[in-house]
Amino acid sequence: MSIVAGWRYHWRKAQALLLLLAGRHASALRCFDAMLRCKPDDRYALASSAHLLAQAGDLPAGVQALRRLTSAHPADPVGWFNLAYLLHQCAINDASETAFRRALELDDRFDRAWYGLALLLIESRRFDDAVVALQRNTALQPMSPFGWYQLARVQLARRQNDEARRIIRHLKGFEPKVAAQLERETGLHASEPA
View 1 (cartoon, one colour):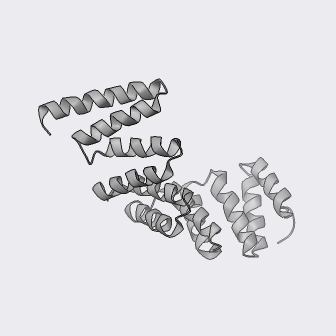
View 2 (view 1 turned 90 degrees about the vertical axis):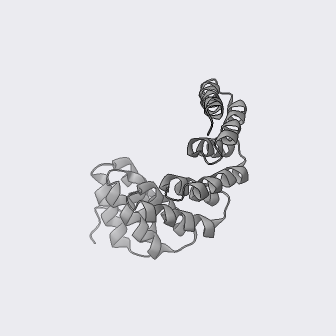
View 3 (view 1 turned 135 degrees about the horizontal axis):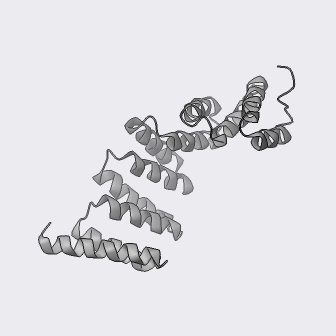
């Protein structure tokens, strides 16, 4: 990149940040486009554009920006995760699963990717696979109730009531409101014998 292009890039980046602070997202998006004319594969500009496009409701354009990002930066697990998330929002589930799995190949400790994959698997009624993803998520985020909640629901769908009860008991130790919600929703009670 030439000195002039470098200066233009940094000037547009500063403008974009100020515009974002002012809530002028459409103008910030134009700055990101200008940055991409200077540096076509810029990770920051591609990710920021995708975020703003998705926020504005233009999911197909957000997906396109993230496809460019993952093509230019194939070793970026966050890019793959964001692509998977938007593809899931667009109900392009096979491609979404592939992108979640790519993110996890790159970073097997990416707890949000395990959770996102699990939600996709639950929607597909692939409960056994969802259990594996949720167990990985809860191992990485043991104090987050979201994975535990979904795991209890999946165990119930698999007719593993004792496992669901065990999870409710576990949740009572650190998230009693979530445990109570599960008891109301499922009709299972942690105090019942296994």
